[in-house]
Length: 275
Image (cartoon, rainbow, N blue to C red):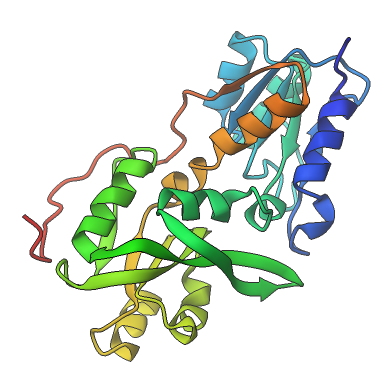
């Protein structure tokens, strides 16, 4: 039986309903004909030119990404811009693009839940409710451990990135309760503090919000773990693969392109007492 693009979209909409996306977001089908057949699907975090090249070289019919290609207003898709070149390559290559962004963040089998699993959390609940949708997760570790051991375990469970993990807090502090939010999460620091957790795992922590959060805690919990935007969200891709494979008879691959923009670090110093 031939699988059509609309069949895959129907499954994606059940898993990650577009109606649950934040009001500012742009999700759903970006390119493609709902009636076109789909035999091969490629999953990636970002629809970069390198990812689209990979999709073309593997004869992919549908590219599914977490981050949108066209989030803000675009007035030209000429190939003189990266976004224009991406749209052109998708259309010329007859590749459909589907985006599941903030609707995948809040889903039961979404980004935040995948990050919670990677962190080893039990008894999870939402961290916050934003636009009537549950955002982030709060849970507990099976057994208390030091912040250093927790960070080491989390690093091993996440896709490797050049920047590794950045931690704010003493390595020997004992932690048990954890909040997680994949991607940029320093707008939820006050919510995390109110939740009374020991650790907050997120990404893109800026200097001033992170410093103020540590000041407010007077050096105690909640400690901060910046896991990197790409790593904290790419951990979700195997979940999508498994969910689609259970519902559809199509070939599904995860992109081999690491779209984390950072490639190496220089002079990173361990100032927290880790061996």
